[in-house]
Amino acid sequence: MRQKLVAGNWKMHGSLVQNKVLLDALVTGLKTVRNVSCAVCVPYPYLFQARIILHESNIAWGAQNLSPFDYGAYTGEVSGPMLKDFGCRYVIVGHSERRTLQGEDSRLVAQKFKAAQAAGLIPILCIGETLAEREAGATEKVVAGQLEAVLELSGIAALTSAVVAYEPVWAIGTGNNATPEQAQTVHAFIRQGLTARNPEVARQLQILYGGSVKAGNAAQLFVMPDIDGGLIGGASLNADEFLAICAAAGS
Ligand code: PEP
Image (tube, rainbow, N blue to C red; front, top):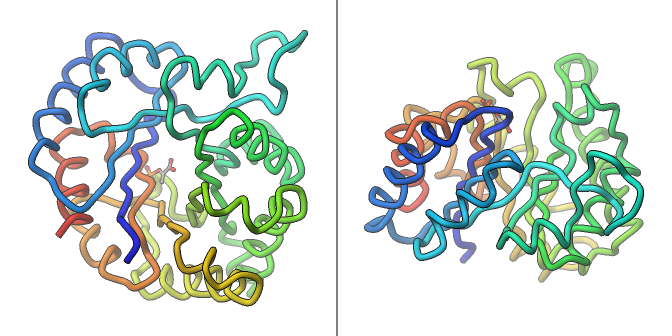
């Protein structure tokens, strides 16, 4: 039985004051939540604050990106070992906002995935199709291709210490979540493809759904057999919403 995971992606939001209120509420609210792992992926400047507030809680923390390199003349970049220094457990790689806005292709995402694992971090690998790709019937081809780049570089065994997040681009930040059936279809496709290569790896892999998850739709999504939790953007900035989503995953 896979443990459910709910991870918040704060994106480029927060301030020291706002974060303290939010994190304090999560620490208190998640004390009694069972059967679910929870994490927040915060902007780099707030990792220290997250570490201070969360280090004795049952909430993990992480970042939203990393450099494919460990150190060197890469001005403005942040490496896996630096994130590890701040106690990060997770790092998001390949988020669609970075693929689109920063031009990150699947080859670079695969390098970041490898760098994350080399630093002892658990990458949360985001994959998902655009609306045009879905309408062209290319959803499976797109997600399989995004996953393949990682498998080619790191091998299937690397998925034993990784998380995959299926995030249809058309559902992110739009309020239009995939239906539980739409999401389950893609999650099952991902797991079946991996089962053919290594059944044990496929069986234990946490596959999260992301895209306009909120308190009101979380339970219906999380009840699907191949949905192992969620990657939560907007709703992770609201303590009540995030706590309700975590509770839905744990019930
Ligand atoms: C995300 O940023 O990964 C995301 C899923 O955003 P939202 O929940 O706001 O759609």
